[in-house]
Length: 266
Length: 345
Image 1 (spheres, one colour):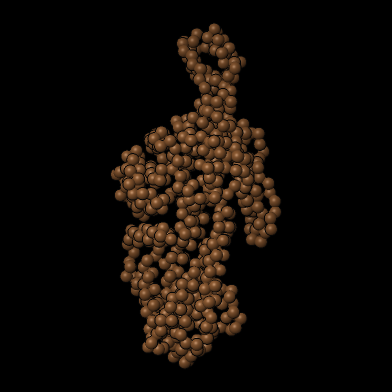
Image 2: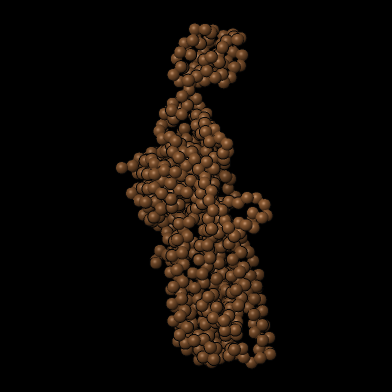
């Protein structure tokens, strides 16, 4: 574990150095993050200009959800997507060889090599929005709410990571799966709204087939601590279970996929 | 017990294939046809500690596939291998710490950073103690003569400079076994010679076992006492260079300088006339007939000078693969020979 943290820090440092080598305009990106959050809040404002509640969610609830959506989207872009994109690229180019030659767990190594640190702006902005929404609901946000929220958020990241690892592993069989990223983001968009607004069969699919409910709706609901949102009380239990199962399954799938790795040009 | 022991190692790749054209493309969306290619077929050999062994063979012969299995990158379809007492494809970290594989065609350096940063990352990944890291690094920098390029971004380096940095990074953990796949590809002749010299020095200094593949025969003749020839995934020869020419090319090359031009002498009766340029003649004669042919030439002709040589190793190799290819004539593509086609849903 100590070694894993050491390596994570090491690669984070290298990524920051790499970023500095290109000297992109950090402020431009910061500005873009603000614009994205702003646009999402405008949508919420527009909706609640016309109605008072959306399947039990009032505007404060929705602001929390927008915040959670931004946190998760940011987190995915800090670590998960850049690393998995790199894995797919490595499988295609055959450079995964260099990862496999290292005396370090290959899954760990492929998951930490890229680190897009400036996306932390999304996390900061998202947290601020979520905190503001929760505060507007009740001035006293309890520790239980915050802890459950943190737990749900961790589970959400674990589920998405596992999902992406599985998608990247598909690259061992289907060399060109890059487009999958677009499909992912299109589906992920649905997470901007609470799953409760969808017809029941869609709701069911978004909870158990593509567990989007666990990614945004449930964590947001837990932070509000309000049963009006319709988030089941046992959601943390389900989320924890789902996180563990998906992590184990994707780990197994990755190891299975490695046996099918043939490298580019033999 | 040899340090590298390979027994009946095999690897079969399943390669999707389809006919050209629109209909075939659409068809392959639903039903894919696979061709099985035997990249390595029942290869067995052993390598002792400290040996340098050269792998020779044309493109697609199975050299790289063999090295990849030995370094744990590929799972074999059949057979066994043991390197340093480990089964490579279990990829135990105790094993990976003691080997290195260098691929001349790929880079493992961080493209946008100075090479020194990549070296440090490598040191951290292999958990090399600081003093040992510094000592090895200093030695390698000196041996490879790269002190001046360490601070430059890797993408600005010349191919030769970059290759030396690639070699440096792959040796920082002082591997006991080294797999070098085309370590001199693409660099100029002088740099090839320097890399070659370095590999020899590294082997002498650390007693590392090295398996090397190269397209440049000079790499092999300069470094390897022992040659393994692979073609179509099969092991064709395993022995010394000298033995290779005796066995694979049972010829001698006789070169003569004549005092004056000789017309209509029947050189062809003695062997193949490789060149006949006025007063200089080069003949290729069967090894066994070399002495009789020499005696006859000395007897019949006004000879100034005569030498008997082994044919150049390039020719030997070309002959080996040349005959192999004509054996399977009509097939054309080398790797097709072992291929079988079948439908897989």
